[in-house]
Picture 1 (cartoon, helix red, strand yellow):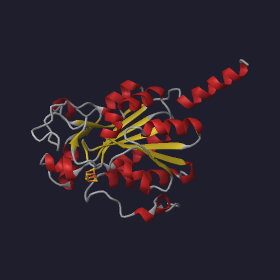
Picture 2 (picture 1 turned 30 degrees about the vertical axis):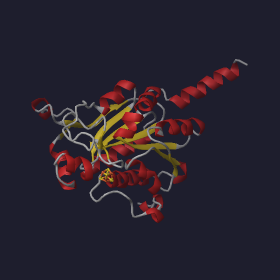
Picture 3 (picture 1 turned 90 degrees about the horizontal axis):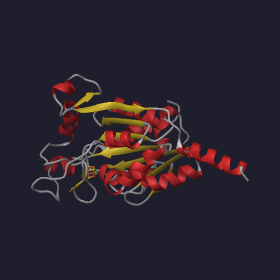
Picture 4 (picture 1 turned 90 degrees about the vertical axis):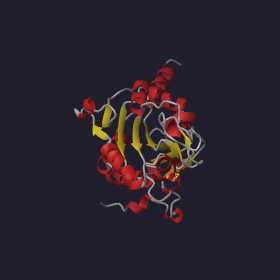
Length: 269
Ligand code: SF4
């Protein structure tokens, strides 16, 4: 590889703040490798994050980075992309950041099919603020704010993204590192709104509260409870979680459509 991976990292901010065994480092590692293998110039990359453990990733990346406010990363990223459409926008978010307070921005970024890569690091909990349940925790799961079990149902991020109009939708886990890097490369190069859900372990809160065990146990859980899309095992055991690329379509991209509108308006003068 011609470009050193360190080229993309702000080493002065290391060591990182994540707990031992946290999945977010695996996501960051594979994202850097994906970017390096794509040969992207870091001066053409913009990373926007909101708030949460996942959002800290923007501090460690030596791109143009914006560490913004909770749930609003996609709103900031939309502004950047519309003003500088030639730049590559990557938006890592947690499940709470992306789909609770940021849920509306998520739906509408997908609907517009704006050329942004949204990486949702789904650990099923609010880690940074102390282990409160998130919209992705799941019924019956324990959290700091649900010591007797959560009564809120969860939902399927990939199905939501697909229904809202995202033109690239995929799911993988921190166990499946080869697939993770490959999918991130596909998502970053896809022209349109790309959603990559990465199931990422939080041993400190979700694993401990739900007695799943440590990081290795959680990685084994991902290995044992996922199947590739279309696997016959899914019919036998509906509880298995499908991984892979659900949607990969070429559809009109928002900035390109906006440019066409500007040109029409100029011709009409
Ligand atoms: S609290 Fe959970 S998500 Fe946050 S750094 Fe620790 S392990 Fe990772």
